[in-house]
Image (tube, rainbow, N blue to C red; front, side, top):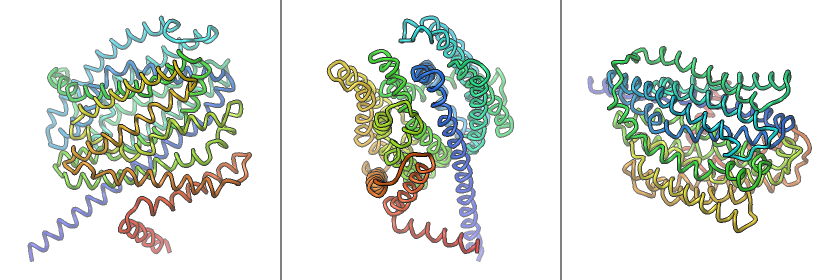
Length: 527
């Protein structure tokens, strides 16, 4: 009788933990979607306004300036990319002293790195005219924009350690809320600046700086609230802990460098080898894909704390199940906007950027986002490399991808007339090849599974995207166009059809029955 009682208690406890985990996941994802919606609205309204008021070239320099800042942050990735993992695992294992040393050591090291990057930033701003093609009438504005973005970058580096708190306590919704607040503040500053003064690109830099300050303030506040055991003392600084973080994260630096070579240099290459105008066009074409990639990155980050905690608790079987489930969710959620872009993209660009070539923008956008059809679900496996601390091989492969991509782009630009289509297409093609040949089988091996374990979870979303896009294109071929209301109707129909197809293409019969049962149960409760 006692054994039965304890078994029931264990069962209830496990069910309670599962419900709590699902509830936290739901809250995190809901907050994430709200944040994404705000970011989408800001980009949606600001980009055409910037193009209309200060030109397509100036809009391109805004994106290029942000890219330059990301180049200089390469030096911080080795240190900061693994701090969340080590602090979370230390706290989970009740090793508070270790958590304090990791946190404080990373904070002090970031302060030193920020000083070095500040010097590099000054050099870049002073030599900007020699580094990139900037029209003379925009030179001062672009220089000031770079200054403001570099200051914001330095604040972000110093304060990046404080963002660990929401990750370690699996309360990412707080991170998304503060990011949303920062984005709203950024948009308000830019709009006020453009409405009451002569429009300049540096106003965008002021908006970014205000947003960065708000985010830093909230991160410090969350750290005090969620991690009261963390004490920032000079005595907690230990260089050996900095070395551990860098040793583990150095391959993330290599990985990031490979990503920059693969697609992070596209605007710079377009500026130097084609024109500033072409760079502006490519920047517009990448706006929607970048939002989709941002959505994907935010959603996949929701699962990472659970992965890390399960790994720390040595629940390896449960971890594999969780990864497969997250891949299915990612496969549907991240490919829905891709399907909408394929079906409704041309109509959207006609309305959003009426002064630009809508067909060209759609083609460039689809080429840019095509890799996502495969990588949407696979991004869960990238996080596994961090969780199990096996980053070396993946980073080397990404670096090879980046080097090959850059070399092939230069060859095509010199010997063909493909222009910006070569800049966008090469990285996408090589990216798909890398995912299928390396990422999927290596991710399975890192989790102790057969190399082919996750292929079915990769190809189902691809099939879903192809079928749903084809069905929607045929069904809506003669659908009227000409206004935002009609475009919204077309988008809603596309999403509805795609969700119904995804229900059968992605979910197994058992999972479909489970979903149906939950929906019926919810409806009964409502009635």
